[in-house]
Length: 135
Length: 109
Image (cartoon, rainbow over all chains, first blue to last red; front, side, top):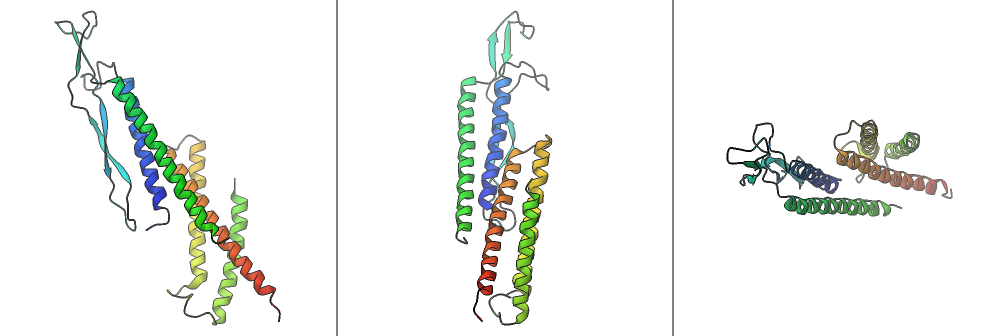
């Protein structure tokens, strides 16, 4: 067990939550993007988290992000014949982003970050209290 | 930043390690202190060098953050906090060593 394992674990949680926050921002910003790099409409992104395997001398490895994956749910079709992206029937294919879901995820990410910060502060105070024994 | 204070502290701790070496050389302290050859003095030296490393990491991270080159704010905060905690521990150990030294100096002969 390393001296600062709990700090490292909390830091990994904070980094992962920060990346989740980036993904949510991207989803919200691209809620109406009808084209992306591959020519298709934007697809909602999600992050995959897994428990990291501990490195040498550690008991717990914290959390790690395995990757950012596309949400496979069907894209929305909106009737908008005036849009230059519309097909012959007048429908435009829109991203499968639901802003309400994203806002709920945003709150989850924000609270998750807070809980990691709280855990880190508690660990810090425990270390400080231990050092006070020497006083 | 905190560098003068740190180097003063390290100088104080090095002085304390000299005292510890002197005690080890007297030969009366046997059994408990020298489990793996090096003894208390070398343990203290390695602890101080690790403290110095973490302080250097924290300083370079802070510079990277100030110049906008740091990509991960979390690792900067964690490194600075680790350096802070290690410094607290080192200061407490130093205080303890100085207390012991003063206690010996006050002893009636």
